Image 1 (cartoon, rainbow, N blue to C red):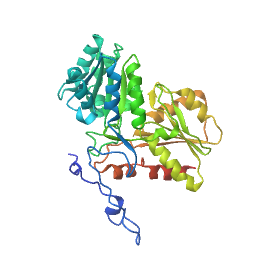
Image 2 (image 1 turned 180 degrees about the vertical axis):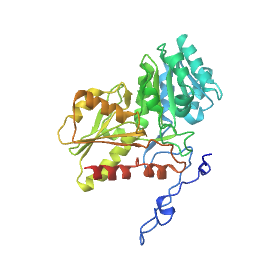
Image 3 (image 1 turned 90 degrees about the vertical axis):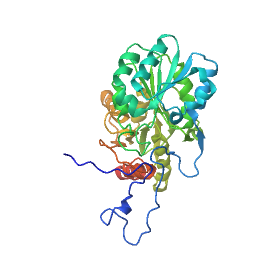
Image 4 (image 1 turned 90 degrees about the horizontal axis):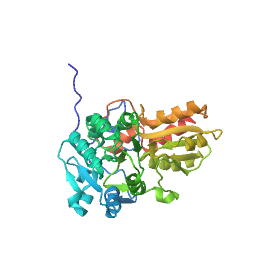
Length: 358
């Protein structure tokens, strides 16, 4: 029988390299690393002192629903943890608490859409992608029903371990025909993506950041457009194509690399399907730049492979191609800052990787 690895309790910190003994510890004479701690389950991605906005999805949905009585909210016992409870407070007669029954939730949402409603459905990304795939496929997407599936804890946004870390949700849903996939970066992106997907006629899967969400893209003259990638920073040495909060990390890494005179461009691709191939090919064709795809997802089946396929089919060969992504593995439990550094998706880790590849 395979021996199970003991996981720390919720909220516990995974050991940093400096705490793992001499083999992986701090070099002699250097001060110990600052102890990195967060709540394992519900942790903000914001760094200390970073600007944030509370519950951008919930507030944006309330604004969108005020003029559209057909919009309803439905959740599988996770209203508070997907920010849908804000919608429920404003519109209690349009808010449906379905209990811990995700498959039932999806079929009920399909039934509501059949009757002309526009359900915004929330749960955790692991439950939607692993537990309800067939119900979404047959009961919603095959029929082209106007259901918006908005899921919290995408990728490595919780320290609770593999049971709650949706590291393969994009890979699972990319293969489903006619499903639009959105991965917003920050509070501004979520605020603008929510009414955009409400206006879109068809099923949507949106990865959701909740709670106090970082505010980044307002500094870059950015606006969300469904199906469009936007160049938020230009640079001559490397092009980072990114989605989700990894665009924030790419921008932070680009600032860190300025000290080494490394010039990094960042192309934010919040719509993963359909992919904005025109924008990606246009930027990838610029001579002398390595292409790096950064995503909060497994290296298998996500944005990285979508971009690689786009480049190959078009015969575009950049100066190099690399991925900043999560490994093809079940990940550890622990504090998010520790895990992000361990798996190479922190800003500092990304900057080290890009510098090493150039």
